[in-house]
Length: 213
Image 1 (cartoon, rainbow, N blue to C red):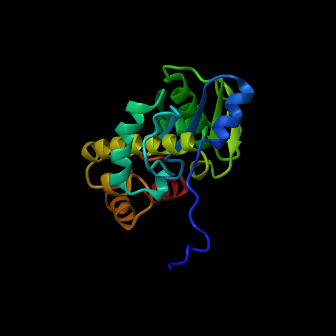
Image 2 (image 1 turned 90 degrees about the horizontal axis):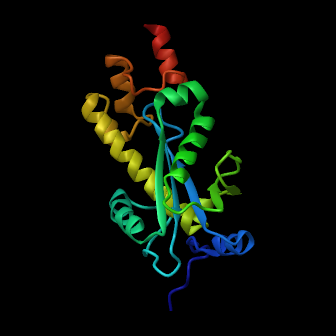
Image 3 (image 1 turned 90 degrees about the vertical axis):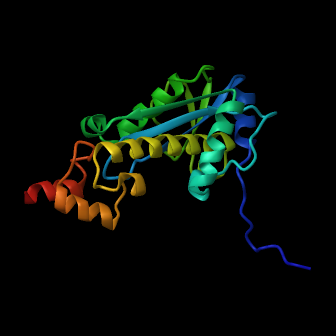
């Protein structure tokens, strides 16, 4: 008989949503972001209210899924959720507000885009963003809450699509591949081409490069 692994992976559930829904007596969404760390491109966020009676199979933290699996789950989540919304904060807003507050702005926009407004939100992480509803932060939430995991998938796929568009607009940087993150091809392109309007010029590597020019 094969032995079960010592620490089998735990998949996200609706346990946190169930408890919060009972307390607030209303809809609860999961919220997550994508793109806080890259050198280029916007930060995105998504909010999702799942239907517990119609859940797509295989929802998990977006980082635990392949690009192909995320692409397959995105339309399923959108078709079967009670409501979903995606929001962005631009490079200009990141520079003006800083990445933390820009992330909060993207989250607000995602929640406001929901066709059903939630009474409360489960938010990945430990920072209490000012959002248009009550929030409950959840450290490691994309691996615990199905709603947050679904939001992580929508935020990631939406941002990846936009970075592919930026790759066509600003060729040579490899945005379609690395999505604006640090990568050897990105470093080489910055040295040969310099930054483009999609780059976050306040980021240390970009700022250092500009100071050398």
